[in-house]
Image (cartoon, helix red, strand yellow):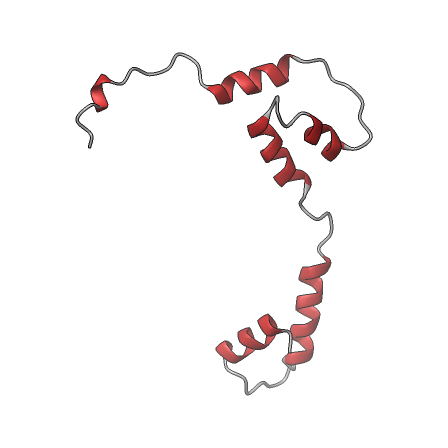
Length: 96
């Protein structure tokens, strides 16, 4: 399987580096919606588009985490709890 490994020649430039260099060489332009701009440029910058989509899709708030902590406080009293760790984890995951 690896017999021809040493016969392979390394490429002089990587498509990823070429894509990044192309992006960095363009002039900045003002945009109102970054996601729409990246969607329009998905053919030009396919790898950067995917990375930008992942980055720009991160929620800006921690509401889900705070809600989970609030449910955990209602489920477990500060004084005593007879639930095991596994039971507590299962109840919080199921939302019961």
